Image (cartoon, rainbow, N blue to C red; front, side, top):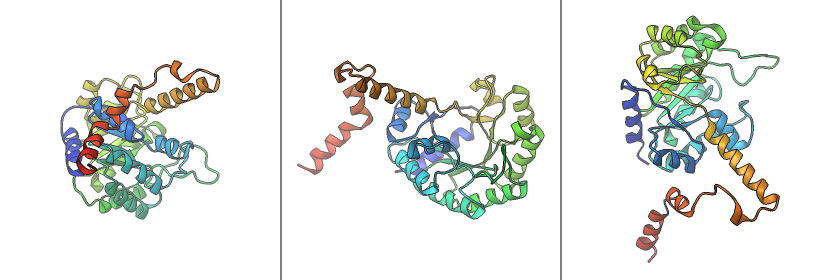
Amino acid sequence: MNTRIRRQKLREIFDSERCIHPGSVFDPISARIAEDLGFEAGMFAGSIASLTVLGAPDIIVLTLTEFANQAHRICRAGELPLIVDADHGYGNALNVKRTVEELETAGIACLTIEDTLLPRRFGASGAEFLSIEEGVGKMKAALAGRQDPDLIVLGRTSAVGARGVDEGIRRARAYLDAGVDGIMFVGIKTRPELEAIAAEIDAPIMLGGSGAELQDAAYLAQCGVRISLQGHQPFMAAVQALHDTLKALRDGTPPADLQRVASSELMDRLTRDASYQAWQEEFLN
């Protein structure tokens, strides 16, 4: 697994003047599909990891080990640069340092560390945020955990939606001063919000949970956005397809009559069957 090449490819995107939409992936096969279809990066979200590994909602019950192991399986399957949502770093600043070490070893190209107070505090209602000082400590710890300078570390905040644009900018500036490579903003809904942020932030921006008017990649690129997420519909679509297929079988549909089943040709391509056949011929005969 050549992590250097994939990290450098993603850095080239961050250093460019364009914006890409990464493919939402969750396992080796989904990552290969995204790579074969021409996506330039993959995105592995914490919410999707919880669904994939545990079948649990996104309430921070997944462990770092479980997340890193799944990220490693995805990275090992191909050459797609992988961006991951490392949530709050699975604890305090020391845990953040450990999180970066484990995810870098897993082969990822980029990670985000957020300033939301997680997991939910006893008695709390609604989102709570770390103090900026604690958030800065987490960013510094993340950078201290990085061994490969090509690994991209982004600060992440959803403060814009909860506390306004000015607070989002204030937090972003503090994290950039701490040394992170860019900022992920979650929950920006309008062009005026993004333009106000772009005017104050001179660093690569990543967007998630954006409003409908923030889908034009050319416009986003002009505002300094380099990565814009489109959501995680691929996983939801896979769940629906699996549900419908199992239901059809349970209801008595003959296997030969099932619809929209992957062809043997597609399965051979995604499992890299030709390579395995060649290796068998070379090493077992």
